[in-house]
Image 1 (spheres, rainbow, N blue to C red):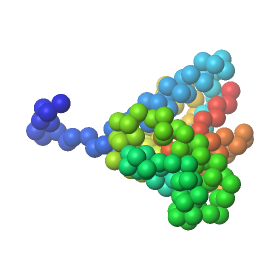
Image 2 (tube, rainbow, N blue to C red):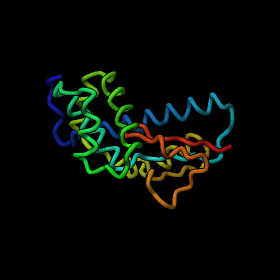
Image 3 (tube, rainbow, N blue to C red):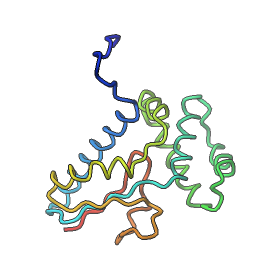
Image 4 (cartoon, one colour):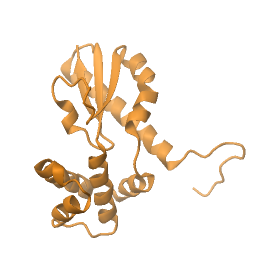
Length: 170
């Protein structure tokens, strides 16, 4: 729309918009899990993706929008982004992300690339009280690579940018 933003109000940034979508999607995903497992959650754990996953994610998004995404990207990406120490893990993750991003609608890919890195840890910490109230449970947020994280089922490993991992305890 070409309508001007009302004066005196701050136009929400793209980062804010994408952060809001993150919270909505995570809320829906959590609700779906609770419905499926048919338990009343006591504790909910969220794990946000590590920085190296974000590097790969944004690079793959960028290649997708430049129309230069191909299977050869995986090897080049891993060597260029200094994530060699992640080895097979990075290769496996990159392969999955390439598949996911190729399926993603172009407008969403464009929006996410433009928004860039989202500090999901900070976003979820800000939304923690909302989640606790909605689910009447204790909520914990951890970074995937936090050495002190509580991760009884190893769920943190499946965290991805825009898709934090979820573990629910009854």
